[in-house]
Image 1 (cartoon, rainbow, N blue to C red):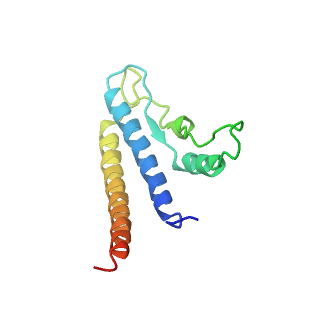
Image 2: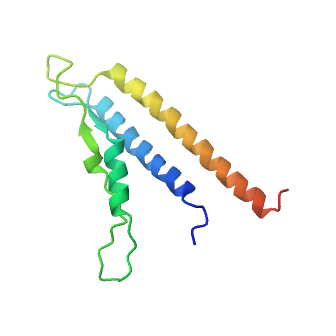
Image 3: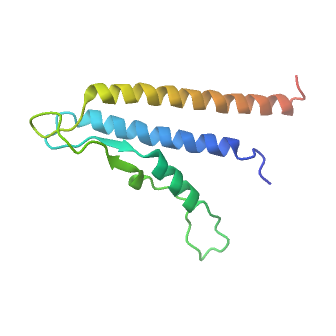
Length: 128
């Protein structure tokens, strides 16, 4: 029986995406002075496809456990060209804009999950 009708699970997957995106942006900013480093991004489409493929239950202990999520394949090289003369492809202004967008997305998901749990709490307490 699925108690939450998949909504909380979907919000959780969205938070997973936002966390991976945060790590990639932080990695890009940390490598802003690394010669030859190319900026990376996270492909939402790749993450969505991997979630749809790897969603399985282990019905026998001898079966492989596919529930461990690996998102490395969702990280792609964003811009193969260089922004600086040392071959670095990180545009700090773009990274900061992406960081702000990701933070807004994350906060919206957290607010929605909080509302879901607030509704469940109200139902458990009998509407009081």
